[in-house]
Image 1 (tube, chains in turn red, purple):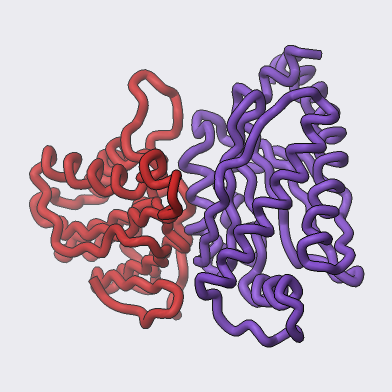
Image 2 (cartoon, rainbow over the protein chains, first blue to last red; image 1 turned 180 degrees about the vertical axis):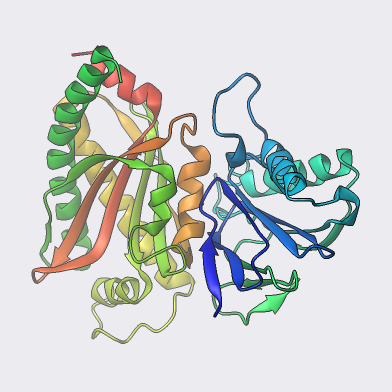
Length: 161
Length: 202
């Protein structure tokens, strides 16, 4: 029996249960970052809202791309993941507002993607797959069983990244 | 929570309830004019909603909806959003265009523009009433229409709110037609500075 584990806004989840599917619903400008260690079938998914954690802030770290990635890594490390084995995929980061007058100040999606790229680069973690940007929301499913990541957006078939 | 912040919350709450009533009743009037049918409005609610629960409003994060979004600038700063389930948005377009319900099947540029106008009018009527009640002036940005999953639409509000808090202050009302609920949700999310200004001027 498949079990859906919802990864809410600003949260992350780590699982080794092959029946579980980690799901981040309706990502708009948010990004979903999935990491998978194939050897131990360990999957982790982060649902981050904003790019960079403000210095000195006590705000929840998993809400931000940069600190969220590090938290997820740490948590997966505790469960035996080896960073060099991790397969990383990214989805989301759409720019939802493309109306005149909004584009300049609302490119949170792009900034989230850039934060993900630079954080992963500094951690020397290559990105194996991605579906980012655009102007539409996405639901991301991450299958613990085999590390598959699929994406669905309105009006489109579910597809794999 | 400290006593002072509790008091702050209570004062703010009563102020917002007054503002909400006047503003939203007027907004409903604006919207009624636009769709050519009498719309009523539910008792507006002023509440703090935990950020993580917002996507679960209105049928869950994957439900397809239309969001008409406006920024508010001026003495009052904040965000306004009319959120309508997709099929209801099609009905609203039918009403505005005076065609039988069920005629509009998709949202093309004309239909979107009609919805923008609806957001514009609703937002302006709201702000006019707020200005009349509080003496605070502000203006809405041009409206943006988003058609997507609820979760994705709501990201905009969250990404531009004060995310240092765990909750978002939200003023919420439901517009109703023929006594039927859930035609449209109207949300107002004041910026933190605005909230402080409003309380301090008392």
